[in-house]
Length: 601
Image (cartoon, rainbow, N blue to C red; front, side, top):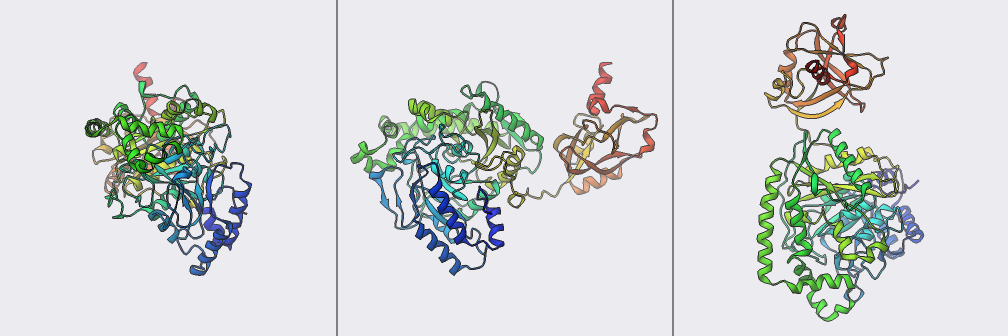
């Protein structure tokens, strides 16, 4: 049975079991016809052409899964060229017949993927809401009254509703991330220059990025890798120098104080706080930071001379066909006339100053985690105030490409109103691969499914494995905890805190007599049903681990300890004989609480 959401793992498994791409194409054709959102596509690949593409694939590569994206159906935002289909940029008067594929489309087709159509967008990719198109406004797959997000509106809805396995978008100000949040999807926004823009109608050429909407981080990262690679035809294409991130103990910057703005949407704020809690449970250190320089840079994209770059992209057409442009889009592009060359240079200087301030914040951070959008609106509300409300969507997205960051947007759960929200992780330029493992773990911890299928279980086959850092984990429960007398035995050889968590509920904690400094004894009692005990998991080098274990005095030793999430880790345990007559402190919840109780008594 073909699943509701066409994730890569499911389709590859079905192909391995004998499903033909022709069978899947028939399902896609049927789903397109049955779709309850007529605004998703501007141009569909004709049924016979789609069948023909599947047949050609079977002739050239008959072995199932013999190409990375063998038989995988995808949709393309209609400002990206697909040979044989028109490119409209959601403006009929601008439309032209594409003679060849954009570089990214050509690479995906060569990998076996099948184009099912060109999707709707905010005209000339100018907007974050999805209502600025003469072809209609795609809607949230969860509530038709609400916007889908834009400008890559149709692309997100195509994936979230199960019409395509993945879709291409573009992102200048957040267009590859906001629609992902509004439709419970992953949005992969590569570092600017990593993926070529040849064959893409520009919005702001110097900061545009081709993006991927996918069901999982693993899917999106795999698709991005097919697309990426230097192309001299793109003046902003770059050869990457991959940037690594810590594989444990990530320092994640989050909003604090006055910079937390959700425009009255308490549901989205609550979901952001829940995502912060999940990040902490995954071992991250949460660090409030000053978002002001990032916000001020974000404001430059629409309230600064970068607006002139939008006019540069379409100046010839705009000079003769301004009346054919959506009124809101026309107003934005016409705003470019207020800027001159001096303004452009001064804008660059202003951005440079803000970049320096942002770099100062990065000194204490490894990643940023921000709400993808602080709120959402109905289509009716958006149309009533299209510029101001659209700007709300970009509050936490507009800075990313100006600063050259990599970003991955992941689902963050659903509010009481049934609408989804999400968060975006930002990393330094070319940290794209390094971002993926934590982004994937964060999505999985949210347990909110994929696209319209809220209860779907993310497949293990798409899980993004963390890079092997060569370190050994060890759980500590007492005098080796952070701030305790023996913590230096971990930090001295370069150990790092991986996470703070709890054991499973069948452990007891005792105060061992006659120990200096005071030490606890952790015992597993299989019949006991407690609340678990607070512990820390550290990472050390194998050599440091060996020395550490060698110096542990009896009755303590190292054994496997089960944590509250069911995983097991090496950690301190005590031999049962040593607790006879010892004081039990299990009820306090951990050694730190016991030490605090001694100081207060």
